Each structure stands twice: as C-alpha cells, then as structure tokens.
Length: 413
Image (spheres, rainbow, N blue to C red):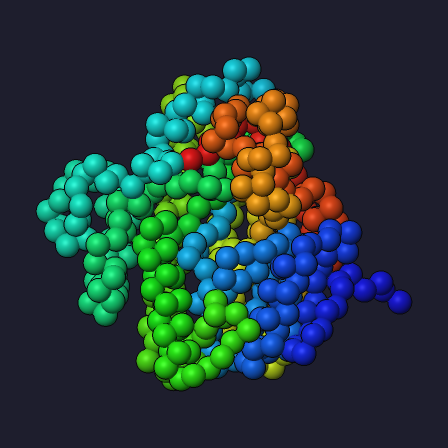
C-alpha cells in the first residue's frame, strides 16, 4: 500500500489536504485555510502546497476550486505573478570569473525597484497616447495585443484610468521578484525571472476585493474573515472580475517575455558573444485563476502561490537567494488538482527577517552569488525561507525534477 503523501485537516468545512509532511507551517496559516474550507462553494477540498504560509487575504500556497463563485483575495493583488526560464547554449566555462559585469548589464536593461515604472515619462499615459512616443519599441509592440481590451476595461472601471499599465510593461518591480543567471547539473546556463502584472494588476485586484466586500455588506453575508468576500456567478461583478483577471494574467505573461528578451540581449552584450537562447523555455503563472475540470465538474481553480502541474506540464519552483531552484514536470496528481508549490515559502515575515538576520549572515549565505549584499534585501535572504530540499521531498508525488539550477547572478529590485 502506498503511503499517503499528504496530511488531512478538517474543521467544519471541506477537507484540507496539505502536502506538508516534514515541512510544518504556522498555526495562523492553518486557521486561514480552515476559514476558506468553510465557504459553501468549495469543490471537493482545499489543497495546500508544501511552501504554504500565511498570506494577506488568503493563504499563500493554496489551491481553491470553486463552483459558481470566486474569491478575489484568494488570487490576491499580484495577479498573474509567475516565472519564466530559458535554457541557453552557453556553458559555465564561457562565463567570466567576475560576474559583476553581467549583473550590471541586466540591471541596465530591465527597469527594477520602486522607480521602475518609467514614470519620468509623464503621468496620464493611459489617456494620452501621444505621451507614449518615447517608450521603447519592444514595449509598444508588446502592448499592442493588450491595448484594445484594456480600453474596454478602463471604460468599465474608472479606477484603471490612471494606472501605470504600459509604463510597467517590461519592468521587474520589488520584493521577491528577481532575475537570475543559473547553472544546471550539466553546466548549461539558464536565464530565469520572476514577476507579474505590476501596478495595473494590483489595481484590478484591489478594486474587485473592495467590490466583493461591499456586496457582502449589502447582502448581509457574514464571513469568518472579511477577506473571503466573494463574487457569485451571475452577480454584477463576477464576469467583470474574471474578464479583468484574465487580461492581467496576459499582461503578466507578456511582461515576462519582454524582460526575458532584454535579459538575453544584455547577457550577449556583456559577454561579447552570440548564443542560442531558447533551447527550452517555460513561462508559468502562480497567482491566478483557471477554468478546469476536476472530479466531473467545470470549476474555477484559484492558485495563490501554486503552479499547475498537469501530467507532462513543465513548471518552475525557485528556491531563495543562494539556494537551488528546479525545472519540473507535472505528474498530474488529481488530489492536488494537478498543482505543485511555487517556491520554498517564507518561514519568517519580512519584518522578522530584518530583525533577526544580520548583514554578515546574509553575505555568507550568498557568498557564491553575484547579487546585492545590503540591508535592503535582508528580507529575501535564504534563512527567511523554508529549506527547498524539504519542500521538494514533500511533493515528490506532484512533480518530477527535470533540471536542478544553482544561481550565480541574482538581480533584485
């Protein structure tokens, strides 16, 4: 008999199946999951991935299948956030001993950090297309398939009129978003990055979370947590939310494509050589909704900090700065609704990490990586995250490892 690979919790709602054997998670996150499990429209059960931890609004590392309703905060405000990785023809021996030049080239090529929205080109560009004249050609080309639908969304939702939409396209942002140069076990060089729908996705998520909360008040629906406010199918905002989220997810995917193209050119320029850059490529969301069929029902699956892992489907599970990352192939485990973790998962909050981890500890933990080694990235240091090896062991029935990566360059916003 095969040993059960997940743990089961139940507290007045549907079961919660958590792939956390050997990877404990905090009581607050368990309570958050229990609140989700008590919602009346959950299909079958809630799945929790091994990187599960407390999140704002809903638990990070959760997979929530719903029938006839959607919870905007279960997606969150970083809509479409995800990963992209490409394997190149470069080998480790072709990289210079000092990688500072490579890192600097990437930082010049991709706007990053809190000032990465090209806001210097003027406000109101969403209204005045003439103000777009100075935007890079690659950004303008990438915006073209997004533009018409965004105009529709703007007309419906006035809060989107002053967003940084096109200005944030092709930009990295801050927090746990990053760009890396990695080596696999065959000494092949990979380029990898992590980002989402930036400011416009945040505005969409925030807007509909507030709309859902107002609906709950208007209908006198009392919830165990106000962040679990939902939009029922057939209500005023359900279709509008799904439409807006799907647009934001497309924006996020294209955003990663634009940045990756720039990273490739930056590395080529820094090394002074050409190379094949997309021998293999993966581009996957891990904060999103998806229409899927599970256990005989068409459902909306919300993955917040989780990657779809259907049989044969490729995904990316990054570790923290200084840790290993993995290119994986899904095993199609239906009990997880064909999902896996999106990373290592935090073991301490950003505030706690800044208090407990010294700059010297961070420097030692990232000694082999060309990256920032200042107090501004202490909250992203390896010890702030769960051990990625334990996370991978806990989900070996969800994915198989295809490549194991170790970063040598890491760019943070």
